[in-house]
Image (cartoon, rainbow, N blue to C red; front, side, top):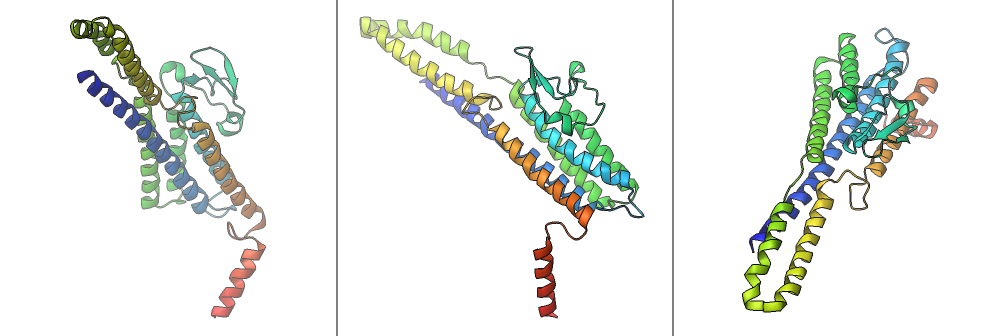
Length: 278
């Protein structure tokens, strides 16, 4: 009974880690979405008295860095290092081989020097660029105080969720010793009553318990490549596509003028509706 309770606790804890990991990933995505919306909606599309062309270029640069944070978080949790050292690649800590990641060559700041070998994760490094962008924009009057404060809160929430995901990745649940000890003691507890039947009963019980333990092992690290892990690749690619569309729309308006998401038909409809109301 005690072994069963231990296994139930272990599996429940593992499932909680899986669910928490998914929620923390959602928190990072939400922060990236909020920051992207604020940066694009509040930054001028064309140069004006407050913003130069360089400021507008920096806006696009920081939005791409936000996308890079998603990839960097995913690779960091999978112990794939070196993406910022060797452009467009990640080095697996398990195999030592480089995996091609072409997305990084478009997202990371030019000349970035990685500090993974000194214990600083790439996601944390990239948040400094976002923080600096917020500070510079505030100093120039592009963002007002409460607005910049809310952006910093979003960046804090992103960093906090990243740290909690890192805790899930690095903290293991050790219960194999308890299970092995139970397997050694169980035959002696059954042999007097079951005689030779104790052998198949012990095999069946231990097979079941180790199977339950295996389920817990699969769930406790939800950031890998297994089919029952969080689909981080698909999720990150979806968010990248979403933000890329927003960025392209923002750039389109910078060339043709008007409002974001308002094409010719939308502008005509808005004008017609406004005329009818007046």
